[in-house]
Image (tube, rainbow, N blue to C red; front, side, top):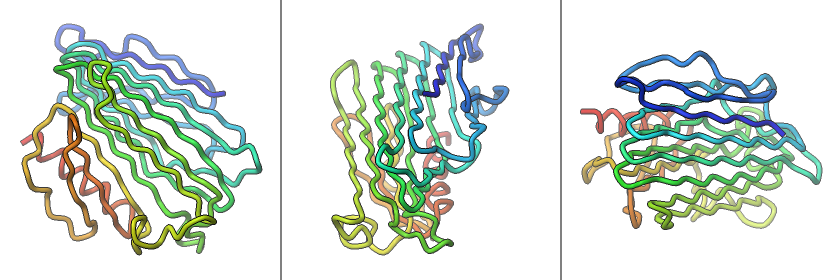
Length: 245
């Protein structure tokens, strides 16, 4: 079991990390300040997530704090036996707090089994953006949809009331993931959820990704497909840049 706990607070108008604790292989780089946010990058000493690994990540953003949380490199899910690997993420953003949770794309290797649970608690007046990009596998190694299973559940609560739920279970042996309703011929898919921000009625143009926007009970969800993770990531970055303007 690997743990990472992080708390960000506003001190005299600047966001500082008032608590951080982690166990191997997880750790964080030295935070730095940019564009009004304190940015923290999570790193892992391991090359990827191995069988039996369990990552437990907790992020708390206090009132008035602004945090951007990123990762060092693509998340690789290695081949596993029956046990598989898993991760749990818990996020809290208080009123007046802002969090950009922007992990790198995930690559499930052939024979991998992974389960991920993300629970997000937002207070009224907070602002939150998250992205989630998934590859069909190691495309260059001809491992498209060669993983055993990939399960993710993302639940967002606004003032303790469920306002968005994304539940995904992908098992290549049981359905055609390349077909209609799944990847539809693309090699990467992405989801972006935005809370407390106004992005307008149109998405920015992107030559490398195809995307659509849906209004959730609270907030906005954007889903995108592309032939590379970078294409979707660039689209999502354009959305964020549009908010700043």
